[in-house]
Length: 344
Image (cartoon, rainbow, N blue to C red; front, side, top):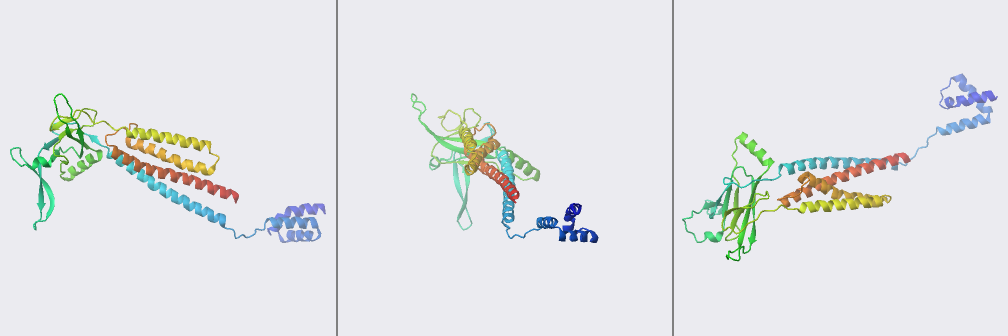
């Protein structure tokens, strides 16, 4: 009997799956009818293969939601990664290369009249320039205080700004006055466009700069290279140079300090999950600014065009911040999916 029990127990898994021959199955069946221990063994074995149907699909739905979030974060990551690459390329292509002054760089017409352009019915539709020669007398022209600067074809961008210089020499009694500072530049992008236009036979118009705003003023050209500005027109009342702005260097130092502080707080309170997530997001902000500043300015953030460079850095830092947030969300969703799979 004991031998039969040993044989039957070995055959029970196959018997429960109906994988025995007819004769062997009949033998096992007859034995189970008369052996209580083997019958219990068989019932327990059968219970192990019984699966209860469940209506709880919450874990599956939660995994699906997190997968969707992961896909959305991946799509956002891809978009901002492309935008970051394109914007970095734009900032490099549009970086200003300032010209040093030479006599062929520009021509300044001291007195200019604004001539209205009229349509056939007499309505003013625009304006043009007309140069007044020195021997012509027009009492209104000095009051206009308008100069027209025409640049060489190498120049693709130009600007000006005014400063007021007080009395410079108290012994000689030299009066001060308004000083107009001119700067001119080109960019790699403009040079590439110019080459394409030349190959296509397209003509490019020279850069014109209309200076107005004060009745009388002196004109100086700034090369933005650390040298004194060159006197062009008017009284020579100014001696100085345009200094590069150091503001962006200070911003990088502040951003680095903020990043170190946020990273320190993150390490101190790393066991607090919610606070750790908040500090992680906070640390992304200064880090994004530092990376964008390096991409736009390199390791030297001194600049002669503060407004332009700061705008580029801010926009690029927003793109990089979105990339960091997207990558962090993808990593978090992956961890959450793994935890749910372990629970199930």
